[in-house]
Each structure stands twice: as C-alpha cells, then as structure tokens.
Image (cartoon, rainbow, N blue to C red; front, side):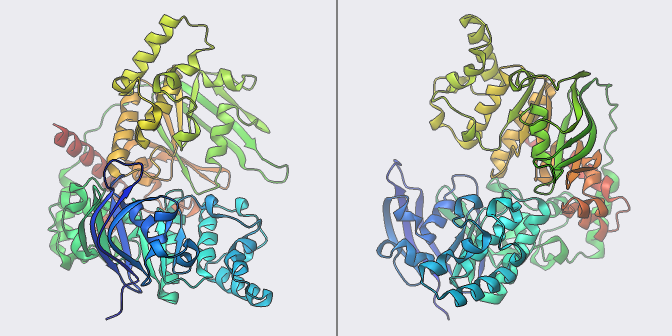
Length: 573
C-alpha cells in the first residue's frame, strides 16, 4: 500500500495566545489520489488542521505541538515553508490575498521564476496550466479584473505549476455564486484526475462539494476528529445534524418523507440516488399530505422605488442597465445573481456611494438624488460582508453609540437609544466588552446594531452568512427574521440559495447588469432557463421532485420550506 502524503499520529496543537489546545489526539492519514472533505462547526479546529498541513503552523502561527505530523514524509517543523509549498499547494478563501503578479500570466509564473526556470520553458508551462484551468484567454488581464470564479482558477493554476503532491482548499466556495461554485468543484475533480494529487477541502457548503466524488468525510468537533468515514456511510447517519452542520437538502426531504437512509440508496449526490418505486411514492405521499395553509398578505406601502436606473464605472461599460423594481415596507427580499452581475453596485447606488448615469431612486415616493451619503444612512443602513471592515471602536458600547454622537441627542437620550438597540440585538449583556472578545457572528450583530441605532427604515446586508457554519448561519438569520417581524425592511445580497429559499419569499435576479426576474424564491430555482441565465443552480429539491414524479417542483419546494420552518419551531419547543 502507498505511503500517506499527510499523516497525523496522536497530534495536538496549542496556539501561544490560547489557554488550551485547539487540536487533541488527531490521527489522520491522507493518501495519494484521495479526495477528503473536512467539515465541522466554526471553531472546531478544521482550519487549524489546514494550517498544520501547509506549514502556516508553526511559521505564521507559533504554538506547541505534541505527537507526530509528516507531510510528504517530512516533519513540517524542520522544513522551510518554501519546501512545504512544493509538496502542498494551498488555495485560500480570499483569493485576492494570494495574488502577487500584475497580470494573470505573471502570477501563475511566480513560483517558476523563484525556481529560475528558463523563460521559454516557463512560458510553455504557464500556457499548459492556464489551459488546464480554462484561464488561458486571460493571461494579460490584471487579477482584480476577473470574476470570483476566474480568480479561483488563477490561484489554482499558481499552485499547480509546482506539480504538488497535495492540494488544500480552505473554503473555496465562500465567495462564489452557485454556478461558479459548481464549476470550481468540477475543475478540482478534473485536475485531480490529471495529476493524481491528494485533495483536501475545508468547506461549510457540503452539498456543493458533493457535486463530485468525495472519498471520505472527516468531521471535527471541539478540536477532535469525531468521524472519519467513507462518504456513503457518513451520509446515512445523523452526525451532520447532531454536530450543527446542514445536511444536503435532498437528504432532509427524504427523511421528512420517511425514506430509510441506507448505503444502497447511494446518497452521495442527488443525481446518484437509487430510489425504489416505494421510495418515490413515499415522497409523493409526503407532498400530498403537506399542503401549506394560505395566509392572506396584508397590504403594504411602498418604501423604495428604482426607476430606469443605469450606471457604469467607465463610459464604455454599463454595469446596470435600465433597472426597475420596488420594495414594500416590512418585506424581506433577496438580491441574487452571478459574480459581477451588478448586485453590490446596486447597493452602492441606493446608499449614495455612487451616482447613477440615468434613472432615479425614490424613498417613500421622494427622489433622494440630492441626499448626501449621511442623510441616506439615517434611513437606509448598509451592512458589509466583513464586520471587521466596519468596526472602528475597541468597545461595543462606543461602536454602537458612535453614529449618534453628531445627532444632537443629549447623553441621556443616546444612552437610552443604545441600551434599547443592544437589547434588540442580544448584545446588552456584553455592552462593556471589547469587540475583539466577540465571535465573528457577534461582531456581525455589532455592525447591525451600529446601523439599527439610527432607526433606518431599510437595512441592506451584503452576504450576511458568508463563511458561517449552520449554527451561526441560523443564529444570524433568525435574528434578522426577528428584526423583520418588528417592521424593519430587510434586503440581502446573497449567493446562498438555501438562505433565499428559507427566509425570503421574494427574490430579485440580476445577470450582466440587467434585472432578469422579480418573483418568488421558489420559482427562481425551479425555472431551468432562469437558473442558466443567472448563473445559479437548480436546488436539489427540484431534482428530487422530478425524479419522484411530483408534477409541480415549485410547489414541492414551497411545501418543504414551510414544513422545515414548522419542524424547527417544534424542536425549539
């Protein structure tokens, strides 16, 4: 049998800044040609495992280790990080942080330049690798000119030129639209077939990773490996749900329908399912029995109207083209579409960070073209994806109060407003804490509190759940749902189709700067033509319902969402 590329033997690790270890008694072997998914809740230790594999531990993150770790037969603590990079290639979640060259070609060639490879050989290698990852027509582009999916391809090419023995991907799908995420998984699969490298993927989006074969799933919890099983065996159990990780939607739907989870079902992916006639009838029976009650929608007043809105960062390119839509008070709406579709540009125009080249934006019927950014911010709050980019004060209270300091309020009025806002956001017990002591999800709440304290009529959030495990995802979304129930209008820019389906009845779909659809969330992912045009991905519920002979896949999705919400409420008591 071949020797493992990566081998942990009773390995433990404790960061110097931590009072207790992050990893305990890790025993894990990864062999050439294997594809292994490492899953776990935030803080479970999976990213630390990745840092041990690629040599960031101990070089970038010092600490004390116990046991044994071998990478390519070598002890990482005794090798340079340069030598380790020739064994393990790493593609990080933030691809922008990996770019070095001014052009795509230069960036791919960087490792070859360090090895003093002759120029003709270097050009040939760069062309070959770029062709393999389908980026060969963009070698003269600057990396920042590329889409999120294209950046992933450049990062992958940059580590492939070394012909590494293992490829490590740390949340490669976090910032990608659904179709780009699927293309990335397909690309990783093709590269592995061509190179025979071991592949290690650390990712929350389990169903998306399982779009292609995965040999094993390693589940982490509180610094320990609690499962290391073949994918088929792993998915038939309930370990994902028990450890706060979202299982694939099609498996949840089958469980609701009473279909037994067995390895004979071939549960690795919705397309691999082997459903018997009895299984299909169980799914159809569940569908017939769970017709949701129809609630009459209360009439709402319009809060925002966008009319014939157009914008371009340069005169030659229009990033938004004659966009028209409106949003009503108290709605919860998703804005979706491929990377570069114009979603974030739209948010910038609404908030006043950019000026439209044509059209207008009205708030409660009034054209706000002449309003300053400050005036708009008092009525339209904008929450960025990364809370660390918004926080500027060391203490929670000071951060939330900051927006009120120039409002003319008295100290007593500010105190009352901040206390009320912190209670709404569940942060009042931590009001005297430093922001640095909070988790990522709690920091997200602080940024939302900093917006809410101004009492805006609408809140726009950019990727509110990006990079969050299922527990923190649910925590943030239930919090936003509670705010919405109090009357706040919530608009979310997202790539997360689960989020769109679960929490927003309505979705506005963009592609290439144009508004493609303004419809129900369930309709978006059950319309194959719309899915293709917007670079989205059909939900596995659609595929499952079609395979089982359900006549109305859109209605199947709606009933699943309603059933899951009721199921969650029953569990909460």
